[in-house]
Amino acid sequence: MTLVAIILATLAAGIGSVWLAALLMGAGLKGGGGSVGPQRLLSLAAGALLATAFMHLLPEAFESHMDAHDLFATLLVGLVFFFLLDKAELWHHGHEHSHGLPAASGHGATGHDHAAAVLQGRAHAHPHGHDHAHDPEHAHAHHHGPKVAGGWAVLTGDSVHCFGDGILIASAFVADMRLGVIAAFSVLAHEVPHHMGDLVVLRQTSPNRRMALVKVSLAGAVTALGGLVGYFLVGQLHDLLPYFLAVASSSFVYVALADLIPQLQKRLSARETMAQIVWLLVGMGLVMLVSGAAHIH
Image (cartoon, rainbow, N blue to C red; front, side):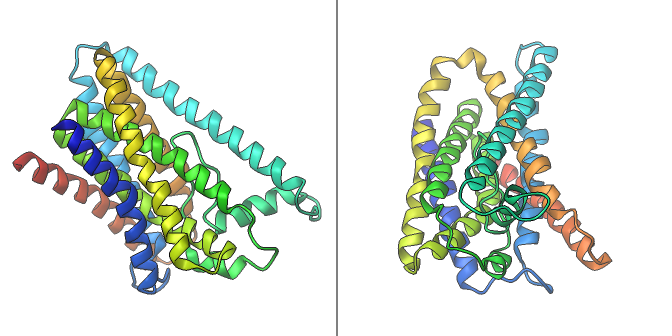
């Protein structure tokens, strides 16, 4: 029963987030005004991830017999681990582009290229694989140079981080069915704006929008593979489950604080700032709502 739930949840999070992203883009999603734009989605995703980490994953880990000091140490090591791999990916990204494009003035091409990658939804991917998610409208606006040659690179990175998502979801399901549902919802929430960026990149490299959707959906389906591996891996190491949950928490916290929230730190009007705060709270509230619904069932 747990395995079936993991497969269904990972497919919903992996492929469902892609289709929802495409649906929102097809509906003419805009970033300004009072619409539910990418900035609002980023706020919602950050709230969902933080609530899941601090209100569910960490409490579940600390309810075990494991020493609190060891669990906090695991959380700290996880954060540093993700930071280091993030830096490694940034270095690789800058090195790769420094050979592909002519250098700009003082700072060279690396900084400019990374900024362009950010605007195209291709920012650095950390081991948990959460690439930056960005405004598709800005991606089109700033894409005036050569066509992006990183379509397959995006899909590869997508597949890796979706695999990691699957393992984290499986870890949560093995601990508690309700916790698994919450984790799957949080993954889906933060993958929607990310997949919007992926779809923009692939549509830049290919005029076939349907094929772009198929490719990103296949990458999202790798989440289920990660779920299968996670189920058997965590099952064999059940005594270490609290540590898996601590690592999952560190991943969620890192994504929210290092990837999502910095994108919200812009000089905005009081109204737009309040909208960000409201959507952040909505994300937290939705996690609580999903938790209550899963508990009832």
